[in-house]
Image (cartoon, rainbow over all chains, first blue to last red; front, side, top):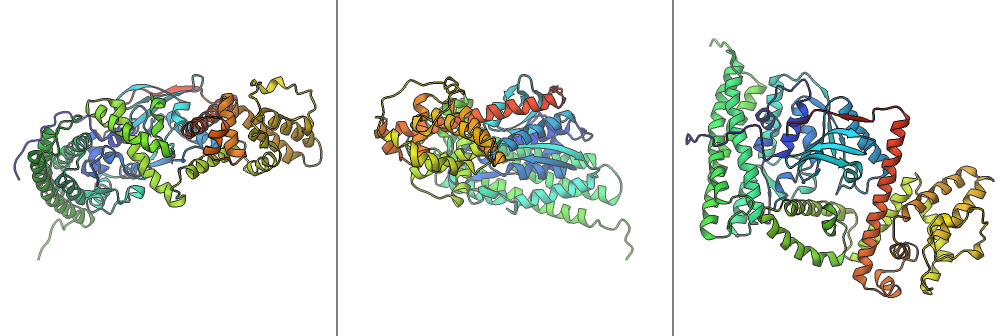
Length: 335
Length: 250
């Protein structure tokens, strides 16, 4: 424990656009009590790290199977979801079904989650106009309209996820599922689809990052962008765990257990965040400084090593917490 | 903005590999200066590459020409699906290959482009009158024949063909005359880009560009028509035309 305070002050914005989009959409549902910190934590996004092996490229943070991951995110929050991801060029029937899926969601009052509206990040479509043939859409860069044609002119796949029925998941269920997601990612068990082999995730990603810095191969822009995303995520991770110690305020054994283990884990994640924030200052986005200079590279390798060690300890605590959530200790024990 | 950087889209051809390196460098420089568009393009490029590997599992060809061929052929098959049949392509291909586009090889003088509708529907074309180098005339002949036949023995099949032909006719109209000629030469004559370049007195790179651009235009046109039909269908079924929720917090 190094007792560092989190530097971040604004907890309503994040560099992880997938979580921002999920949070933005569920605000229109009965689970609108979940804030961005909850969503970052419960979906596992606060605990993600996705590093390109060659040069730490800019695509890292979004190079995951989006359809799968967003569905899993929504599952964790207790939602059934819908997915469209036909490959381009999209056959007409699939295009119609995809537009219909978005319109049906908006008719139910919930925006649809999409990718690459104005920039290649996740965003939301919150309105449609058949006469103008446009969607009303928003992402972190812009609020505006996107014509149906522009939307259909996608790359790779024509992607959309819509939020369906809200299920009565309890906070216990949500926390358990979150911990499983977080630990699967940390230990590289998460499904990576076509990105497997090119991007490393979880604890291994720190080693990958270190290797690239040792070889002085870090792409300045990509490196700085990845630091922005990962450091922001770990700040949320620490905040999320800290909030558990406040929100789980009951007196029974379970609430006490969550407070204890989450509190322990929070300290480690605060430490992780502090190292990554220092690295962020070393390589400011977008210019990214000079990752190949000896001094910068050595300092960042040191910081990444420390971050990894602290994260390992944090993960250990989260494993204890998950075991506990699967099998609560006895409230009273006479022996 | 998107269109300017299309050169970097997946499925591009050999000459683009050359551009890509140079572009990549330019993009990196721009991105580092905070150019959002350049940054976005870099993200897209890297993602597209990953998708490319997945694609290469099923279709692995190092020859750019083969890739173009494949991509174009797929695109054309998709044209078929627009009209809910894939039987069309081999059928049309057979006919056209056997008789028709040999005439392109003979390099006829370039004709003025004629809108299809100017070939009056009252005219009763016979195969000997058709200029088999002119896609409009071929399609007109085929659709006319299909329309005639639809009245006879196997009406369903012929109606289907008629629909297909009309669909393709409307799609190819989005291309310029020259683009269409090159596009057709590629499909129907099995000419490789080098042969086409010689035929049209241009460079191979230019042929690649034209084919790539044409393919995109045809795809866009197809999307435009599809959306047009979809919106009309919705309007006819009395569904809401417009709904906008409050602005999301993102």
